[in-house]
Each structure stands twice: as structure tokens, then as C-alpha cells.
Length: 193
Image (cartoon, rainbow, N blue to C red; front, side, top):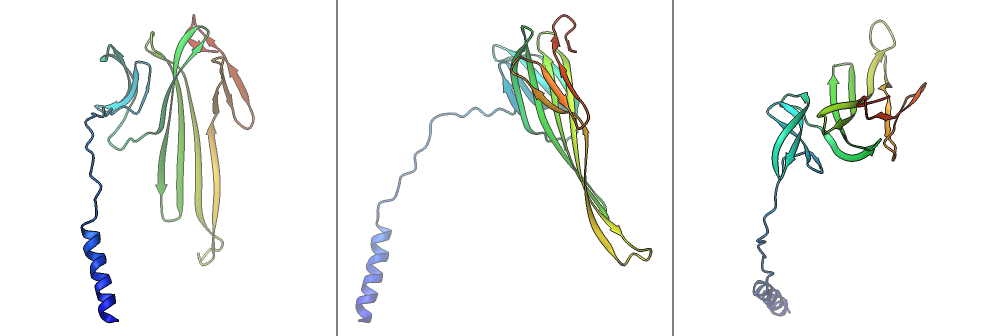
């Protein structure tokens, strides 16, 4: 009986080592890797030489840039999107991105999420609208007595700025708890009013 089990195990090992193996297929296609964070039409948002910027290209070659802001090496925008839309007959571009920061001390931790929404006019190479919405989640250890023996953890949420919404007609809605504004693009003044 032991010889049969040993023979079966040995035959299994031998047959599995001689079994057909899947051949690896090497792709001949080249994948173009772009260091841009977001792209729409001939605009690309990217970080280059300490600048977070929009690069305007013509026929695949960079022609001009619009500087969004100066940044350091730690800057890492998340959920970066660039969208083209029309407002009052003008093609505008909405650039949105999120930045997360954390401030931590022994008694307090702040997780700050900031959502930026900027609208640019490519032909005028200028910012026509900007919105910043900040949400701060605060976790804090609070002592209940003077000798600091009893404590509790408190959580708070603080919001600043306006929630941003772009409508299909190119108008913009900004709202918070107390107020709501609807702004329409004025093509002659190149600004939202």
C-alpha cells in the first residue's frame, strides 16, 4: 500500500513538471506615459519646476503656460480633473483637485481636506473664477479635571468656504449653510457675476 501511494505521488510530481506551461506574450505596443495630472483638449495640468500649471500645447508642442500656484516637493494633488465646458458662447476649463493635510499634536489631530475648483479661460490665459472648500475633522483629547486624570475624546467638524457646483449651462452655484449664490459668466468682462 505504501508503494502505491509513493508511486502515485511521484507520478503526480513528474507529470506536473512536464505539463504544458503558458507562454508569456511580449507586447510590441509602446505605451505613452504622461506626467500630466489631468488633460482636456490641448490643455494638460502638471507639476513642473515648482509650479502647478496648465500647459497649452499646439500640434503636440507646448506653446504657453498658465501658472496655478507655486508648490513645494511635498505637493501631491488628488482627484485632479480638467473639464471643458461652454458658458455664454465661450469655451472655459474647470480644474478641480483635492489636497489633504494632517496636523498632529499630543492632544489634537486635525485632518484637513481642501477642494479647489478653478475656472480658466484658455484664450485670455487667465483665471476667471476660483472656489475653495475646506473641511477640518478635529479629534481632541479634553481633560475633565484639573489634575488631568479623567479625559474624553471629542470630535468636531469645521467647514469653511462654499460647496461648488457647475451647471450644464455654464453657470455656477456656490452654497453653504446660510447662503446660496448663482453666478453667470460675463464674456465681455471675462468674469462670473
